[in-house]
Every structure is written in structure tokens, then in C-alpha cells.
Length: 458
Image 1 (cartoon, rainbow, N blue to C red):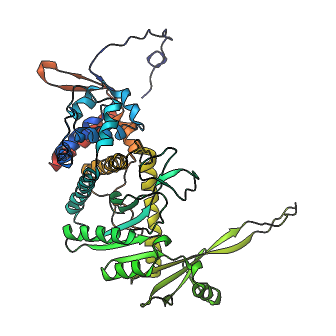
Image 2: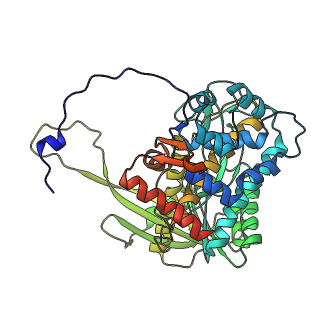
Image 3: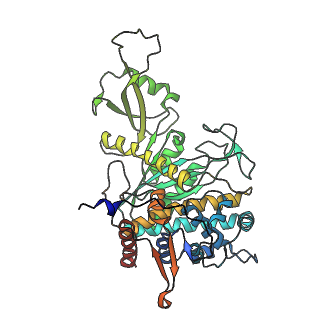
């Protein structure tokens, strides 16, 4: 359809004067989706049960503060003081059930007064919400990824320590260990630790607790786990095998001269493709009792030329090999084992989203319990974003060799930019509360699609 020039262009208008009035305008109309989600999950009541044991007389209960933190992170804010930018937003107030939002000092005091029992109850709530989703899916197989992620700070906070930090050397930090579910891209559990511990510190008991918690609720589910070389040990391998969990673990083969000898003496490698080749062997370190399946993979790569390069029309390329060793108890083909193990890279994308969009790497207060509450709020915001999308549509994928999530998820930043950050006005025509949003066709279609899916799922 063609438009005339007069229908497209207009005169340049003068810059309007600015006036501020107290009106029922909201900058976050898309929060209506999360209001429906919170009501469906009964989130406010469940949070209240986590802090019911505290004998505080604050007007704002701890459960309201945690809910505010979740909304704060969903909106894209980071520091606690940023809450002043939406103090008078009517939709945020309505979502919290408040006429006035708490100030920064109140939020800080609430976090500082939390204790380990509050953290333990909030942790159980997050696990229960994840288990409810997994129970409704009834998947025959679940894949658990385990890895740690650093939370750095340039100030002192209880429980922090100076440890290995590639990007911020010398900074104090926490080093939590995460368990994520590959099929839904949610964080199932985490173990909070000081920043100066090795990846494997207290990892084995944590891994076994996650496995047993899933099996208690999800009867008959087949579990499989993926871990990097930091978790490689006889105890971990034996424990996973004894629990009947299929696993793949990267092997720090440079610690074992025998593995290096096996690679050097190997003359015939089977090919995946032009870059990848492999062989496998039943092997065990001398101190182990049981042999396991070890898969050796080499990848043909270009090597950087270290010597001076002659300035000529032709510079030869030197090729070499990168090697990787995986220990597993899987009985599938080597190609499937390698693809499965390589799929654990998706967990790094979850960490990236948690840090860049849910502000997981921010340490707001000086108390350990307060920082743990904030971390669990970030995890809850991430999981709720995934839950929102899983409620709105059926799975879009089947199980793949890499165990890619069975939904094609939008990142929180995309949901925030497209739907949440939409201006609107709350009015009461004929006594009926109405949220009026600009008539953008894409926003209208997507918002109504989410709301219809919530009503169908109810």
C-alpha cells in the first residue's frame, strides 16, 4: 500500500515544555504478565512462609522485600539505590500490594537482619518451584550440569575471600557451585562458598543431594550429569556410578603420564570428520579400583607461527592437534558421548544471562545471609522468566544429543525490552480497573497471547 507524501511527513514542531504531575502512569505495563504469574504460583504466600519465623515489627515484611528484589531485577536495575527510580510506579505498587514502596535503607536493613534459616527456606522454595515444573513435564530423562561461578566485590563482605579470579585479580569474592537443569535452563540448586576454595570443595555431597532430591519427587526419571575436569576424582566417579547416574567428566589428563603415553603411541584414530578424530580405551589410574570408559578426542587446529615470517606471497600454515579426554559410564556411541559432553557449554550461557541480566554478580550488603538472599532473588528472577515462557507455549524441540533446552527461550533482556518496559495508564472507566497501553500491534499480540495461555493453563 502506497502513502502520499502529506500522509507521511509533517512540519517540525517546537520542543514542548516539561511538566511533572502525580498521575497513575506506569513505565512497566508488561509487569501485568508477572502479576498473573505470581498469582498462579502463589509466590507471595510462599515467600511469607519462608520468613514467618522472624519476630520483626517492620511494616514491610521480609517476604515483601524479597518480592521487591525479584521485581527490581526483572525491571533491569542493579544497585539497591536504583529502586528510587520506580518509587511511585502504580503497577509496581500494585504487584507488591503496597501504597508506598520501602526506601533503600529499609531494604538494606531487611537484608542485614536475615539469617541462615531464612536462606535455607528460600532455597527450598526455589527448588520446589523448579520441581513443580519438572513434575508437570514428566520428562523421562534429565541432564544436570554442575559448575561454579565467581561473584567479585571490591569491598569487605562477610564470607568473602581472595581467591583465583581471572578477570579481577586480588578482589574478594564468593564462589557458589550451581546445579542447572539442561532441558529447562533453570537453576535447580546452588552451594554458597567462599571465594578461595577449589571447584571440587564440598561438591560431591552437594551433587548427591541434588540427585536424591530429584529422585524423591520424580519417580523413575533417568538422570545424567556433566562435569568439568575440576570434579574429576575416584570418589566422584564412583559415587555417580553407584547412584546409577550416567555421567561424562573432563579428565585433566596432563596429570597422568599414562594417558599422555597412550595418546603418543596411538597410530590409528577413527574419524568423526576432517577436524575431529578419536579412540577409546578401558583404563583406570593406578590408585583406582575400577576401570572406566575413557574417550580420547583430538581436533586439528591451526598453530600460530612463532618464528619470523618472510614477507612473501605465500605464508605456510602449520597445523597441530588439541586433545581432550572424557571419562564416562555411558554405553552409547562415541559421537553421542562427545556431543552430550560438549552440550555442557550451554551452562555458561545461563551464567552469562544471570550475571548480565539478573545481576547475580552484585554483592549488595556486608552480611553473608543478606548477600545469599540477594543471590537467590536473582536466581528466582531468572527461573520465573523461564517459567513465564514455558507456561505460554508447548515445547518447541525434542531431546537432542547436546541436551539443548526443549524451549527456544528469549533472554530476560529481550522480554524486558519488548514487553515489560511499556508505558501505560491505570484508569477506572465505569468503576472497572483498566490498564491502557499504546496500540502497538506486536506488543498487543504478544501480551494477549501470554495472558490467554495463563488462562488455559489455570
